[in-house]
Length: 303
Ligand SMILES: [Zn+2]
Image (cartoon, rainbow, N blue to C red):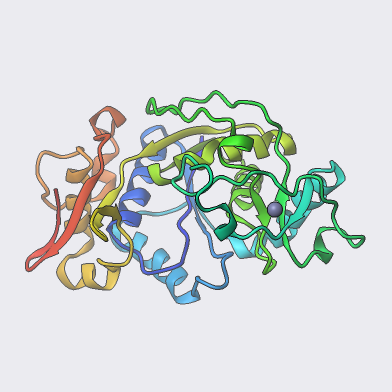
């Protein structure tokens, strides 16, 4: 059994990323498995090396040790190989449809607008996908994916219709998340994917890409999120409680205690180490509903 924690390094570590790290790590260790960290840094317009370094430091501070750390930007050749395979199978096409052109159309399961596969009939330029100055999409099969994750969350979709064919290489030549994640999980031989519920709507698309590339589908589980007050409603926690602020209030065991308590693993938020949580770890204790995190004068509070 091999799990992975795969944060994107597009900002400081925060309580939500550290909660995800803790749950991934505990799931693996409680089953005697191995667990790695993959730093997802492909989006050159949004990532910083300093944030990747900080993610490594923050996990160590919390008490999490990884069997391996992989940097996604080192894996370009594997991503290109997958694009070549999809191109050879006639699956790739260029698309310059704008997001604005889709707005007002059909809602996708992730809350965005579905892509109507408008450009499916278009061919790649003579030089192949590398020569295309537009975004590249992968033509999925129109089949329905029936999938319920280990937590009982129904992920069934017809991704080609519900979401639309995914972009696999962006116009700016960045390899898209949906492709990179399935290729990297394959090459690492990941057996179990534990991640936040915000990514759940992408799972069926990833399963369809796995099928196109002949990749076995891992086990999935999607856990609750930490939220923060956003524009009139609660939104997934992002930058409002950065790691630098957490460290000013807490040490690693104190934060571990707060996160473990929020995850239903301890009776009180008293300080603890991840090692001490392994024996009692059980997903049945972890709540299904999202929680709200906020910073108060004495430190982090999760309700
Ligand atoms: Zn298009």
